Amino acid sequence: METLNFTHGSAPGNSTSARTNIALPVLMFVGGAVGNMTAIVVLSVSRQEKKSSAFYTMVCGLAVTDLLGTCLASPLTIANYLDRRVLKDKRVCDFHSFLLLFFSLTGLSIICAMAAERYLAICCPYTYQRWGVNRCFAQKFLFLIYISHIFFCCLPMMGMAKSALQLSETWCFIDWRAQERVAVAYSALYGVVSLLLILSTIALNLAVCGTLLLMRRRTVQRPVTRASARQRWKALSSAAETQMIAVLVMTSVVVLTCSAPLVVRVFANRFKIDHRADLAAIRAASVNPILDPWIYILFRRSLLRRLLKLTRRRSTDRRISPPLPQRKLLCPDMVTDRHVFTQLIHNPNVQKRSSTSAFSRCGEKSSNSLASKQPNVNEQVMILINAIMHYCPREETK
Image (tube, rainbow, N blue to C red; front, side):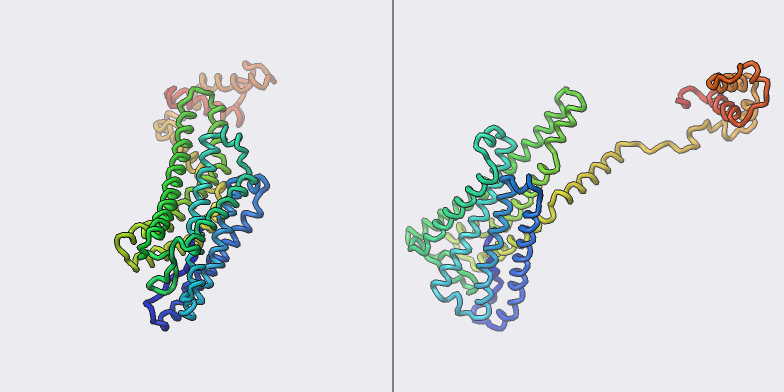
């Protein structure tokens, strides 16, 4: 999403330091390209119902946006490290500024659209169905975002604003020092649109998470049968839905964290220009396309299902109390007092009751004839059980 301007330059004129630091933008370029291509492959081989959903169509569009930004903006920055005259060309500088403006704003717009899609699906399901939000709808919306943002970000090249090579001479952006009313208006408009996208994304994510928590609370408090409550919450917190929310929240955190500093600098430079802060902001934006694809890769449904199973297993183990030790099932007094235990074993009343109970189940012989015989192994076991029940209190035998 964010612009892939890997601006890690040094002070102007220090070519030795620039050539030494070229390894960092190269590594960032490779990391962003490989990561986004891997994420696109992972999303492409997912199951058919996932590929047909509007949410994952936007996620794939976000990965493609990151990949395009990496492959278009980074080579210019790397070339400028090798030759400081590359970005001094006005046409190249204008194009580089367009790339940064476009991919920064497009990334924010797509993440906001993802949050809006989840909000409609969870909070307004009837509207979601009436509008027919599906894969085709998402593709059309992405196309609309691209077309509108291309036109909006081309306005500086049409004369509405000016692009300028920044002090570090490693990136181009809109001129903060322009005093023309049209240029000031465009800079303010760009900042306002970016800020509204950020605030909208935060508000929609909070609304989605709050609705899910409220639905869970109502499900728990509603006087329904246990089976229906389980089915409701299982449908609400399914693996697919949980994965979507996890991908949305994590991607939003990364995008907003990386892009917010640049938006802040758009407003702050109207009052005080700070080149170091500007360089730090564009560096933060350049990290965004490297982190985003790993969210799609790590938050796969299979991995998330394993984590959910592990969490449920731990919660179930905590609820189940550990079994009592075997020695506590017997009366401690009986175990320690062998004399009393021996008397109970040889008690004729206990033997008679045990023998009668044991052999009446089998139905082989009458209880009177069996009581006079010497007890075998089974009879001795029954005598031992009855001795324990006769000696121990009723509460402990339960």
